[in-house]
Image 1 (tube, rainbow, N blue to C red):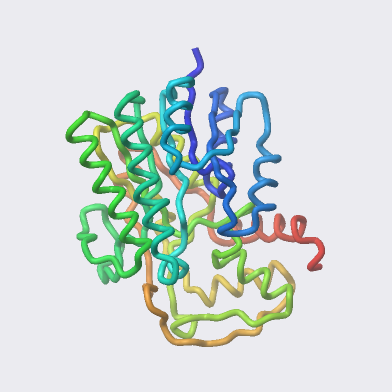
Image 2 (cartoon, rainbow, N blue to C red):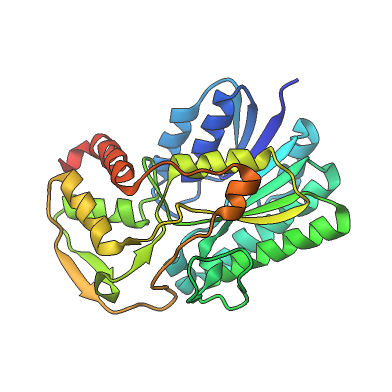
Length: 320
């Protein structure tokens, strides 16, 4: 009998790709998304259209609606939960903190409490590299202290990890937190660097480079992340936390140069100081994920940017 995985945030960047991979492997997916307007809803709908198939069943539902989510669990009895729905992004959380508390904290608590009732084999959820805050030790390890977040977004993600620990300890629910490091690629979020810079460049508008472009990020291609998520779903460990990153730091200025090269246009750059809530570098120690999840990112930044730009040129042909 095929196992069913419930994915929250299925219209999202990572959720839609994970659903596609699971369906490609012959598994059944129940997807939940509220299609909110945190960014362009037409992009979310396009992702859904792209992954539509008989073994992916999509329900328009908010994770804050406890009764509707409980009904889905009761009817479908998912073997695994992949909780990816969230209010994402550091900067927006500084001006709209209450939205983050409701979706990320209360929404995750709803999923954990309902999962306690039905006890799926595994509860995998999205955390973030932002929990490392201003950590100056690199690479970032799961053993590092993460008690000093510098954004509300990071604080909500740390809160979800703590709540998952409670449900594992009290009720024996297998939980796995995945700390994603700067995911990019086709069908990505418009507010993230790769997509945002490409849009501004092709629109003839300046891009903002904070810390004068001297920022370093562990950019991780979407397919590598999605494979890591799928692998974690099939490996319940009790209560674990894993970094999913590329384990390489790329200088932001070099990242922009690759985008310029692939788009065939130079960017107008505004060099600015560091902004509140941001960190100068992220870099993942993925030895634990390699050992326990068989996680092995394979996409270098040159290939990843090329594949993103190829998609961008097609999806935004009006800009070319």
